[in-house]
Amino acid sequence: MKLRLENVQKSFGQTKVLDGISLEVAQGEMLCLIGASGSGKSTLLRCINLLEPLDDGAIWLDGIDIAEPSLDPQPIRQRIGIVFQSFNLFPHMTAEENVMLAPRRIHRKTRDQLRQPIAELFDRFGLRDHMNRYPDQLSGGQQQRVAIVRALAMKPDIMLFDEITSALDPELVGEVLEVLKSLKTEGMTMIMATHEMDFAREVADNICFLDQGRILEQGPPQQIFAAPKQMRTRDFLGRVLGAHKG
Amino acid sequence: MASRPAGLTRRQVYERSLKRRSLIIAGGSTLAVVLAVVILVPLSPGWEKVKLSFFNGEVFVKTFPKLLNAFVLDLAIFAWSVPLIAALGLAIALARDVRNPVLYPLRLFGAVYTDLFRGVPVVLVVYLVGFGIPGLGLPRPWNSPYIWGTVALVLTYSAYVAEIFRSGIESVHNSQRNAALSLGLAGKDVMRFVVLPQAIRRVIPAQMNMLIALQKDVALLSFIGPVEIFRQAGVFKSLLANFTPYVVAAAIFLVVTVPATRLADYLIAKQNRSRS
Ligand SMILES: Nc1ncnc2c1ncn2[C@@H]1O[C@H](COP(=O)(O)OP(=O)(O)O)[C@@H](O)[C@H]1O
Ligand SMILES: [Mg+2]
Image 1 (cartoon, chains in turn cyan, red):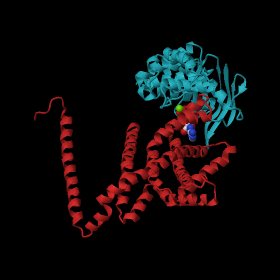
Image 2 (cartoon, rainbow over the protein chains, first blue to last red):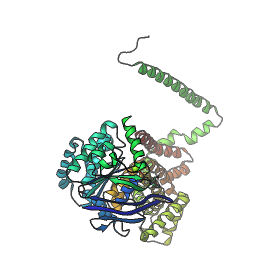
Image 3 (tube, rainbow over the protein chains, first blue to last red):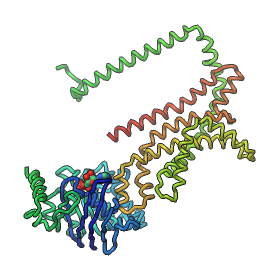
Image 4 (cartoon, protein in one colour):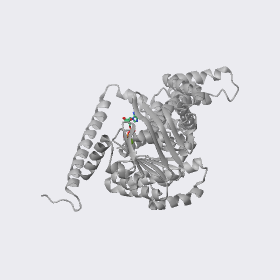
């Protein structure tokens, strides 16, 4: 599995939101996108998942350009899981039904066939007791973990996370980040937009600093955090890390 | 501090006294109005006459069973219209939502349909369809006013019901659609399993109000033949030269529509509470 973006361009009306993004993620790697709010992190993730069409550029997934506008997006989206800041669980379904829906409809599996493997997934993320609850009966951290399980149930090749801890109370952030660590150990390939700098420093293989739709600087966390080359990267890190300490 | 009943907080004691006070005031003012009506109305010069022709106990007793019987026909027409209206209304709502260019005619049809049937008074549709189509000289049973009267109600009401469904579909946040699409679900599965169930839940109170309106509009079919309650009341009126049968009919309608209206209001209130 390998994902490579080549000169990705995206505008909303007159506003250029992604301005020539190129990057690479190898199998089992975790890439963290950092950058100020409005720098284009969410848009980039949504483009990779084909929820937003690109204006120009290419996205190579195992040698296929998935940005080709004439392709059917459905089978591609099945290979790319995404988890959103606001969970977006289906409120009229229990946690288990949320997770079962896509495998039932897409892999044509029955509930009975799915019950066992899905129960194991819930177990792994400490959600066994919550399978039959509705989203509004779960805490934010539990909902977000269910959303991760829902995406994992499709057995994607790569997972995208869009600031998945930003809507959580501080004491619930840890349980969600733990899930990401365990996915990393299992060799899942991941791209994550985040403001959790400590986590990025500890777990990411690579960091991209986005600024006004461009990658201003990228490299391993030691380099980005210890010796940022760009003035704007230093400013940004100074702001978020300063705020964090204060 | 004054002593208070055991187990109650200060706040609860205060709220109790407030509640008792407002109950007493509401009860008193209601009693005053009812007394005024009961005492003053019979003092009006025409009251004896009105009482005889609108509230005649004898006529009431005589016509009630027959009218109740005729009302069963209203209920039957209502009962077989509802599933047809729900199905057609949903189909039109979905037709107005299609994005596929091949299906554009369907979309156009949906738009024209809803504009047309919401723009014409129900009673006109009942006349045009109910007299017009059997007038084509169709063989039995296809000339039945029951069938074409029902068709007229279904056409009109499905246009309104479709618009309510559509507003429900549009009220489902786009992030729900995106979440479902991102899993790789097909557009029709997204609609069927994620959007529609939420949309339908949200519009249930509004659709209940449509059902109440429909229940009353069934009486319009009396203009084209079926002897339902309104027509039966008219027959009695001519026969007995008395308006009491209409009052009886109104009372029978109220027995059905008032609880239904209360239920709809309750559902709306419940929904507002759960969303805030
Ligand atoms: N659907 C949209 N329509 C118009 N502008 C948008 C839309 N989505 C995002 N934008 C704009 O694109 C820019 C990047 O947004 P986003 O990708 O959400 O940034 P980030 O996730 O880094 O905060 C912002 O200026 C935002 O206002
Ligand atoms: Mg964002």
